[in-house]
Image 1 (cartoon, rainbow, N blue to C red):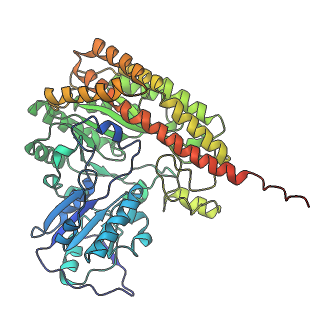
Image 2 (cartoon, helix red, strand yellow):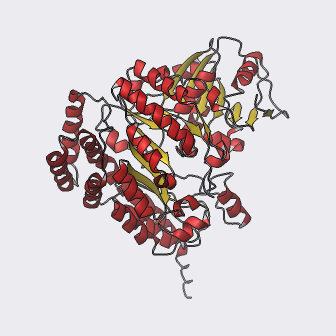
Image 3 (cartoon, rainbow, N blue to C red):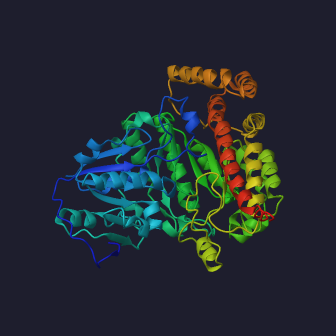
Length: 542
C-alpha cells in the first residue's frame, strides 16, 4: 500500500456519507485548441474526439456498491438535477480546464453537495483547489482509493490527500468504459504506461508520474480492447501514454501481442500514440507498431534549434537529424504529426522562419504550435522563480497565450514571430500541399487497415457536410477542391491512405479557421504590449 499523507490541521468535520453512495463524475469542457479538432467535429457524427480516461479509471477504483454517473461536458450539459442526485461530486481536470473546473465546483457547493477534485491540475496546484473543493487528491490514487472511499463513508475524510508513491499499474482495474456515451466519441483512449525516462525542463509528466515508466501487462491491454469490442467499438484507439516507448522493450512486447490480437479479430481498430523522437532509432519497434496497425504517431519535436533543445535538456531529439528521423518513420509506415514551441531562452529572431521551413520540409500537416510555459513544479518553473522571471498574471497555457515568464527575446518580437508562424503554417494552400506530400511520403504496409467504422452511410454523411461547409461555403474552397480531386483520383482504392486523406481533408475545417482565431488573439496581446511600450505624452505647454 502506497504511503498516504493527509492534511490534519484546522480541518472541518464532514459528516459520514455512508454506504451505497451516489457519485457524479464530471469532466469539464476543454476550451478550443489545436488538440480539440473542434471545427472538424462539426463535420462528424460524433460530438468530441476523446473521452476522460482518468475519470473512468477512477470509477473502476470505486466500491462496487457505489452508483456512478459520468457527465462529460463536451458531450452533454451538466444540470442542477445531476448535481442534486449525487452524494459526492468528483471532478478531474487539466490546467486548461481551470475555468470549467471552478464553475462545476462552485455549482456543487452552492447546491450543498460534497466535492472531491483530482487529476493533473489538482496534483500540480493543490493550494488553488483547497479553497474551492471539500477534498483534494494529489497524485495517483490507484492503490489508496479504497482507503479514501472508506474515509468518505465513515466521516473521517481529510481535506488533502497527498499520494507520494507511484502505484503498480499491473494492478489497475479495467476502466469503466460502459459509463461513456461511446457514440459521442471519434476516438477511444487506453493507457499502457505512466512516466517518462527523460528530463525535459518544461515537462510536468516526469513530476506527476515519475521518470521510471511503469507499464501494464499485455494481457491487461487486450482485456481492455476486448471490453471495448464487446461494447461495439470499431473506431480508432489512442494509446495515451506521454511516451509510448519510454520502456521500449515492454512496448515491443505489447506490439507483438496486439498484432496477434488484430489478426484474430480481423483488424477491428487502428492505433495512434505519442512517442519521443528516438523512436526512429528503434527499427524493430517501428516495424512491430506497423504490424500491430498503428497508423500515426505524435512526436514532441519542439524546435529545430539544437541550442534550444540543449537548453531544456531535450537531449533525445539530438541523437539523430530530425528531418531524417521523420523521413524514416514515414517510409517505415508511420505517418507523423508533432508539437512545436517557441520562447526558449536560446531562440533567436530567425527561429520563426526556422520553424516554418522545418514544418514545410518534413511535410507535417498537423503542427501543434504554442509558446513555452513554465508549469508548476517543473524544473523550468523553479528556474524562472529563482531568476525572478515569473509573471503571476499569466496562468493559462492555452493556445496563443504568451509565456508566463519574462522571455529573453523581446515580447513584441516573440508575439509577432509566433503570429507569423501560425499564419504561414495554416495558410490553406500550404496546409493542403503539406497534407498531399505527407501522403506521398507515407509508405503503408499490408498490415495496416483503417478502423472498421464508420459505415458507408456515415462516410457519405461526412463527405456531404464537408462539401457543404468546406467546398461551398469556406474561404479556402479552391485549395479544398484541389486536394479533394487529387486524393480521390490517386488513392480512392488505397483504403489506409484514403482514410487518412479524408481525415486531413476535413481537418482543414478546424485548423485553418482556428489558426486565424489564434492569430487574432496574439494580435490583441500585441496591441496591449505596444500600448504599454508607447512613451508617455509630453505635458502640454502653458
